[in-house]
Image 1 (cartoon, rainbow, N blue to C red):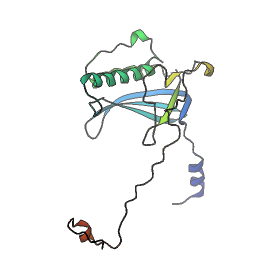
Image 2 (cartoon, helix red, strand yellow):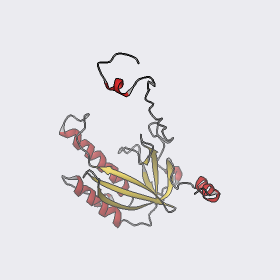
Image 3 (cartoon, rainbow, N blue to C red):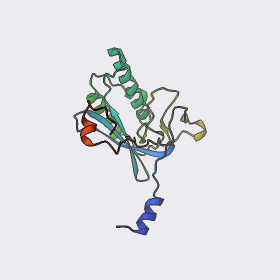
Image 4 (cartoon, rainbow, N blue to C red):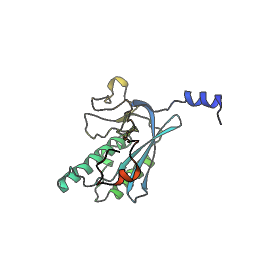
Length: 198
């Protein structure tokens, strides 16, 4: 049903989260989930003004650009460093020691710490768009490009910034057009031996 009031309300509805630096964000919860294909992932929920944005962390696995087990271990270490950025907002460094072999155990450790963290501590986070146009934390783990810090840090002392690789404008992906020959019949289109244009 078409309704002017609902249309105006929808047009004026604004998300609490934007691409860029977001203040007064609560790290609300975390949980371990299983995808429909059976893959385990970690989901962290950030909340602001009743709105949520979720960060998904998948188990690193061998990919075509990885040549050795050391490459996979480096991906795991980068993921650990990313989680440390979040956890150090709530815990002293000496409490953040996890050693293990499985992503499932690591994710369970992160979930326990986030869910037991002081929810009164607000954070400042950086969100960017991924290649599919969804808001996410930047895929970085380096100390020179942080994505989260406590709100108690004054803005003029903040270490969060928008870098040259941070996508803050939603990428637009046009539909792929497939050319169609209106004079070609279905049978001719499916016959590879036919070289006739009509």
